[in-house]
Image 1 (tube, helix red, strand yellow):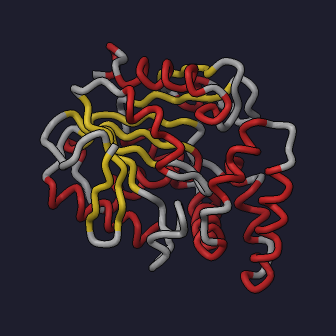
Image 2 (cartoon, rainbow, N blue to C red; image 1 turned 90 degrees about the horizontal axis):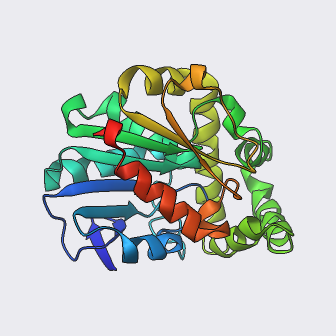
Length: 257
């Protein structure tokens, strides 16, 4: 595993340098870390290059400058442009699902995109009904205390996914968590995310956890769907074997190429 730096972006990868090969740009969800996916980086097929940029203020609170989705998306675009990446496979989890849509809407031409794998990625206001909407219901001034409460609740939870998530939450800046939550709620309430997802990305796969509360009909998505068994919203914490199996199946999907 290697760390690649671009401006103030830190990107975890299976390659020492960015190469012109099949590229997976992986955007994880709020409060997670690229290190949560080291098991995936170690085992990925060598024909693929995987790049996992850290969200602002995540993973030991790095990159906290300009911790909003607009600024972050622009940096990702400049990175793609500088490295001349083409035929990108986007993989996104939770709030990370907003990033490929913002990139497509604002910066990138369709020919650059190969496909989009969305693991319960933020597409509607329903996706913000738990953590992000609750976060922005508080003023920013008192959120630090609430954030510590969130970490405490998750760390003592009976759910494996929440307990492991709490470890990454400890390394995440409360300010960044708040700012990104605010952006996620704003974009989700607009209703544009789902419409753009369905109209722009012709080749898309939707992943969802068997035990998760996030669920949409095939009619709504109109895409290939895979269920991750015996897991919920954090399958990479709960069952890394099952997550890796579905991930590999998705990036090699015959009808997706």
